[in-house]
Image 1 (spheres, rainbow, N blue to C red):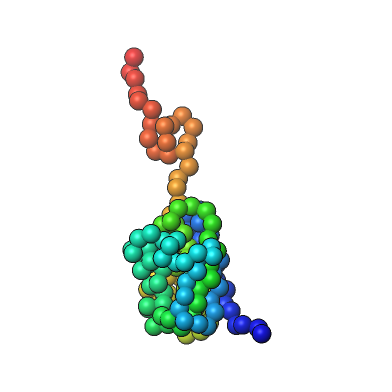
Image 2: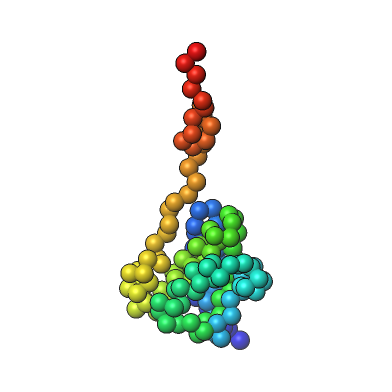
Length: 130
């Protein structure tokens, strides 16, 4: 039995999410664990489900996701982008709603590298006149 599935990749900071959407009851599984168990706060959970809320497709697709790298906030952002991209594959007409909501934009903000001769990316060592 071949099940229909739609794929989307999401990235945020150093996190990567591989998302598979399958027609179903709305179950979200992340790294073979329950969605509620994987993401501790309600804020992260709502952030992930925003793409379904905007397109009014909540409860229509099961989400199978594999996330790696970064922390929980970055992983949640990556998952949201992956779900939004997969929804575009499901139905191209959803693209406009997702784009105006800003869910198809890859958030490019990442940690700035530390420079030599400095304590951090921007912080300098204490200056001594003598």
